Length: 218
Length: 218
DNA sequence: CCAAAAGTGTTGGCGTTACACCCATGG
DNA sequence: CCATGGGTGTAACGCCAACACTTTTGG
Image (cartoon, rainbow over all chains, first blue to last red; front, side):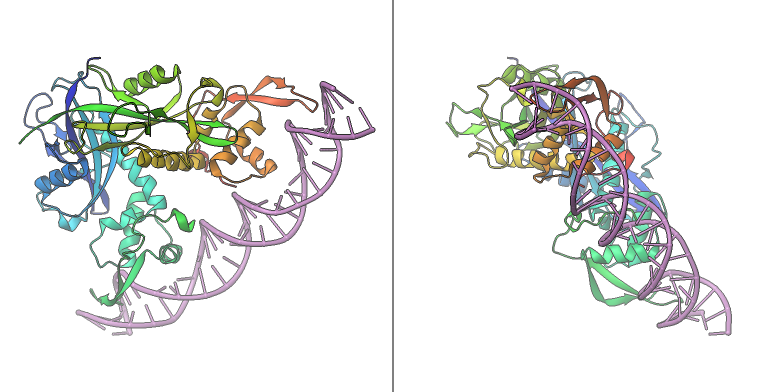
């Protein structure tokens, strides 16, 4: 048996919503091959470091962000068939509020990205698909928002992710029925109109809502 | 940066349905640590071998099976914190008809397994969870059956996976509406009763049925 | 008082569930 | 002719989608 040892990479699909569109954070590749192409930020896992820790570290190094939602996507690997040498790539996706990204981050529309290096177009497509699926039965989309947020903010996120307008009354009824939100005593007063109630993510059952049998879409 | 190279393992959750119960194929561990414990069969990925290929090869080596449904589950890795040395473990699950396993395979109830070595109890639990989820929106459960099969066979599989009895008429209506099955001209005549129509999996759209908006349960 | 976003209930249609009997065969 | 599993239709219910107006504020 020829046991082979390979490097382990983590590659990140970092999603954000900016200007009513789902965006992904990209990085410009400086070396050959694929010089000048865009790619997903990533890096190698170091000694005595878990995969989760490596993913969080790499995200921090590239964006300065801490405590974002990270979820493992898929592992790609064809050890020995890549010009850069043998490795496996474990992909994660992250969900980040647009406001927390530095303004000079290179964001691109996740559903119509530029040409990407290596197999990164596949990785991104899988991330988009997973995010859409999770939108239907989890509260992961709330991670796109800064707390506290209004119900209109939440609806906007779901509309971007599902790519279709939603009914305001139905949306609010369902979202509140989940008991995933916690109302704060404050209101957002912004401009010449009625102030909006502000919510945060309820600390209990933060992500899953399948248990309540409530599904988006509507 | 201390780039580390690690071995890559594939570990397999091999499901089958035998005697009206979801079972998993286990292997007895001969060495320390965890000597005498049960574990998921697995092995190391070799040079120039893709992960999928390695998973298929390891399954073949342990069971003699070819062409079974294999799907990646999750990647575990805490390189450097395991007594056996650094590695990552990429887990897959397989779905196999009970008839294709050799009679002396060690099968155990997947939902109440014996004590497992390492982190394998977690892996198994994730596999069970994933399989249940997929039962609701895919035709993966059909892979538990030998072709051709009857509608009663299919219903039996779904009942075992969902752990609850289903209504015969409703089940048939939904299953046929998927257009995932193809009727064969043969009938199964077995014992003193009306012969049953025999089906096989339709070659088109083999796995997914979300597109038709049809969900199990009933 | 006007503009702009927040907030709020009801109904009709459709899909899902619940339910019981006849059919074909072998022994 | 009897036992066994295969095969079939309908009606009530509950849930979801559709829909429009009032409220609160700042300017």
